[in-house]
Image (cartoon, rainbow, N blue to C red):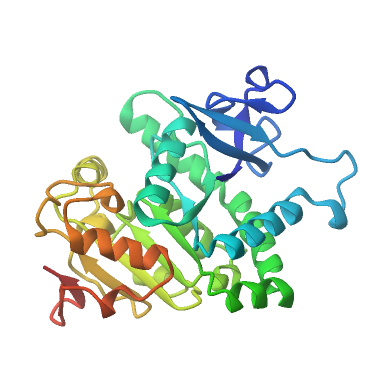
Length: 318
C-alpha cells in the first residue's frame, strides 16, 4: 500500500531506503508538519517492509515522485479492476497500528488503501496526549491539502480520468475517529476548494468531532456523489471523548442529524455491534459489513441495505 505521511523519519531504520514498521515515528517531520514523504508498505511475515520513495535532488513538475507513483497506482487499479480508498486514521495510532488497520480494510472490503498517516500518538497522559494529537491534526491540514491537491490535479487530467472511468474504477475517502477533526479543520479552512470532488463517496466514520453545529462544515464538503456519516451511540472510544471533553461526538449521537449533504447510518442496535468503535471491521453483522463494502468501493449503500430509514431523525437504523 502507498503511505503519504508527515511523520518524522527514523533514518537509522532504513538501509538504502528500505526499512521496517519502525521507520516512521510519532512526531511531525523534522522539516515541519508540511513536509510529506511517500513510502510503500507490504507485509513481511510478522513485520512490515517499508520502502521510501526516492526523491530527486532537483524536484520539478516533470519528475515529481507523486506523479510517477500515481501513474503506477492508476495502471494497477485498471489492471486488477479494484477500487481505491484514501484513508485518514484517528487518535493514538502508531505507524504500525495504522498499517494494520489499513490492511484490515483491504482484506475485508477488497479495496486498495492509500494511507494518509499523521502523528496522532504523541505519548503522555491520555487527556494531554489527546489535546496534543488535536494540535498535530490542525498542523497537518496543509499536508493533507497539498496531497489532495496533487491527487486532484492528476485525476482531472483527461487521460487519467477517462481511463479510470472506462474501467469502472472508483476512488473514495474515509476519515476515521479523530481523523475527522483533521478533515473538519481542512474543510473549514481557507485552503479548501473542490479537491475532494474526485472521490465518489466520502465517509465520516465514527467521527470524533462535535455533533453540535456539524452541518456547518459537513455541508461544505464537495463529494463526487455522496457523504456518509456512521453512528454508534454505545461507542466506547467516543464515550471517553464525551466524558473528558463535555461535547456529544458526531459518531455517538443520533440527534440533530441535519446536514443536507449527509446520509446518516446508525448501527447502534445492530447484532454484534455492541460498543464497537472500529465499525468498518465488524464481521459478524452482515448489514454493517455490507454497508462498508459498498461505500468504500464507491457504491450507494442505501439501495441494498436491510436497515430502515427513520425520517423522524433523518437516519437509517436497525
